[in-house]
Length: 187
Image (cartoon, rainbow, N blue to C red; front, side):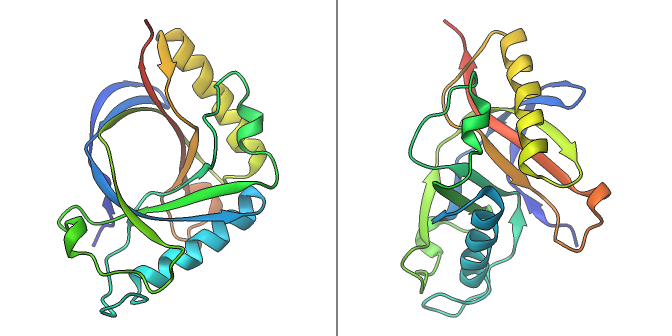
């Protein structure tokens, strides 16, 4: 059985670049510190604990994709993508909850650092890439995304996030990763 992905409408596709309109969605998220890799591991463990029964009803919740990670605390301008993945700092790691479950129906996390919230509908500019999502590859793909955003006359409205779609046992060369950022038409 395939893993559920967050629902979106594809607005534009040009090679690896896409514009997507995402519907409102519910996420479980946690803020963690460390490098990009450390934060990803810490956040994933805490969120996996929640969906695998670490909640007030011991209910298991189906895994969905992507698992996303964004630098916390500031809006990152696309003209400085390297600072988005600088070592240290805080990161927000998110799991999207299955679409069939309402926020009111989700059990309360046992870990108080895990929070549940509704993300608003948004348009995201996305670049898809394969391989390992190391800091250097994320930086390179973010630069490509910046060029596409500029060429389409879009304005960045939020922080760059990284999205991963595959379990860790997937061979590195088959892994699906993305960098994404909320956008709107430039004024």
